[in-house]
Structure formats: C-alpha cells, structure tokens
Length: 286
Image (cartoon, rainbow, N blue to C red; front, top):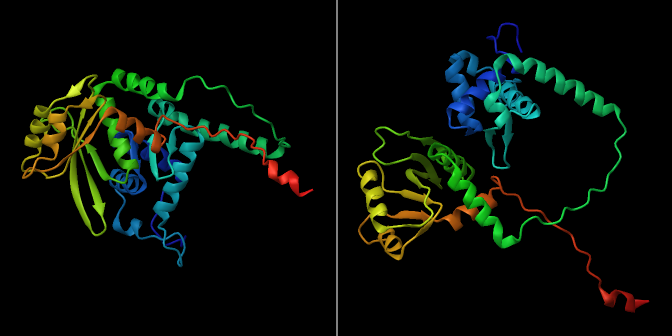
C-alpha cells in the first residue's frame, strides 16, 4: 500500500468489530452485510473505502482485511460459514470477550505451525452406527425447535432465509411490529421485493384466522408473506393462503422446515455410507 494512502487497520483489529456486527445482525450475516456494518461501525471514510488491495485488483483493502478477519475468527472457533456465504456466530463467539482474541490467535498459530511439522498419517475412521432411524430425525428436530425461545426461533428463521438467498434479513423485534417477526428482500432476476415473515412455534395446526391476521399485519407494508411453523396447517389455512384477490402467503409447515434445515445443513447433517456392490458379470470376462 502506498505510504500516502489512508490508514487501514490490520485484520486483527477488525476481528472484534466483525464479530460484533454479525451479532448485531441476529447472529448471522452475508459478507456484504458484514462489510457494510463494519464500515459504518468504524466510520471508514470514502477515501479509506477506495483504497484498493493492488492497483490492478478489484478488491478493496478493507474487504481484503475483513476477509482475513473472518477467516481467523473461524480458525479460533468464533464464526462458522456455509457454502452459500452466510457467516454465523458460534456459542464460543457469542461468549468471547475482545481481550481474549489475541491469545486465541497466537494459540491457533502455534498449533497450526506445529501440525505442519508433523507427519500426517491417514487414519481409517469407522462409520458409527446409526443412532436414530431415518423417520425419527424430524421428531427429534421438531422437539428441539419447540424448546427454543421465540426470539431464538426468529433468529433461526432469519439465518435460514439468508441461506436461501434473501438479503437484508431483519428481525423486527417485539414492540411496534404489528405481529410481524421480520422482513427480508428477495431478488428474482432484476426485480427485488420485501417478504415479511412470521414464526409460530405450534405443536398443533395453524388455523385460517392466523393467516388472515398475518395478512392484515402486512397491509400497507408489502404483498409477500411467509408463515413459518413447527406444526401444520389446516385445510382452511391453506385455502386462505391462496385465496383469490388477496396477497399470497407462503406456508412453511414443520415438515417443510425440517427439510429446509436439512437442505441447507443447519443443525442437520447427512452422512453418506458407501456400500460395496459386486458386479458378477465382471468376472465372466476372464
């Protein structure tokens, strides 16, 4: 970087602001949201934001150092990221204090270089026996979702929507939200529009009245809604959601929610077991 260029903090000084921004966005955020949040939080000037990593590069120095900050936060176990570019705080990250970061970084570096010097030997890891039958995993998952605090379930929905491609997903809070739990922006080709969501941790069925109330809360704010529940929807609720002349409401039942969490690997992982298959015809050629 040119000696006359504005000062850009090193990545280690950006780790704490990065972690705080992800926390402030509900515990998960996309890279662009993190960058915007840190820039605002740290008060970076336009001049600082225009400093490029290299003259022929398309990445700014701030984005470059924020990438290293995210990477080290992941290395010390404070952040985790998905294949879709969503970063989220871990339990360790939520409890981490600013003064603890330097020691954790030094500890990580020592271990990293120690491992590089060791001769790695391949180990055969046996596949554990299945602890649950396939048809039981959704029941286990739904029981856990029902145990969550309402605010935690809202943040989970926020994370899920980010993974599904929504941007600027925000949990609206408890007061003055008119019954709406959050909103995100969904883009289809060149068109983007707000989608409001409401979360209901039900064990039973959501009635048509809940759909009408949700639609009423959206009135004047948007015309796209997403109603997420751990339970199911009555026939009347499904009919109400697609009623002619009324803004459509997409319904996500408990089973749908389990499938989405599995698809985006949010708390649900799928283990692939390779089974040998004998091709008897192969031996006929000899």
